Length: 200
Image (tube, rainbow, N blue to C red; front, top):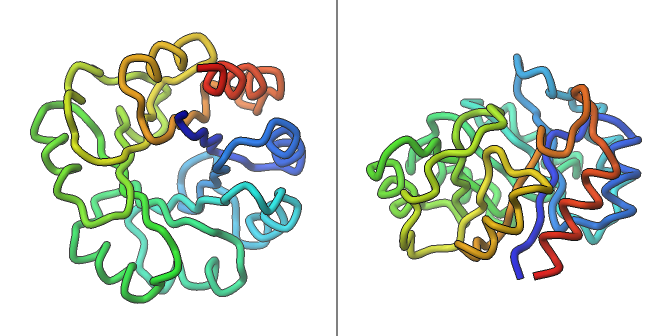
């Protein structure tokens, strides 16, 4: 069964919704200038109220390691997600510095060469996406046999998550805008997304 990640959490209402419906991962955007970005105080507050069974993922985009450190030292995140142009040297340095923290590396999938880059990543997991919060799917035919566990993201909604899982059996499915209404997390959509993902 594919795991579920609900990303882009910003408020205690968002936390209440995920606590109720229990995805495997929750995510916060921790880099500017993205509109879902939260600061470190908010991040720690959200983590404090999150059910400890749910792993909190911090999403960073092209940040210095020194920027990431306080989020880990304060216990705000359980998983690091890198969503920029971070290379394998950077990933290995992250893993060396924070060996207890799993690392997810996101890749924007436009062509088969991008899948090859994902295959070669030194991250614990890779995330296949269409962009940075575009809310659009990429050409799933490019996935084929990636040969490693991956998070499938980009344009997933309660309406198409079942199809995605049936076709590809990804390690996890990841959504943000797909469970929002007017740029706010929608508890009903979160419930439906998780229900459909786990019914299979």
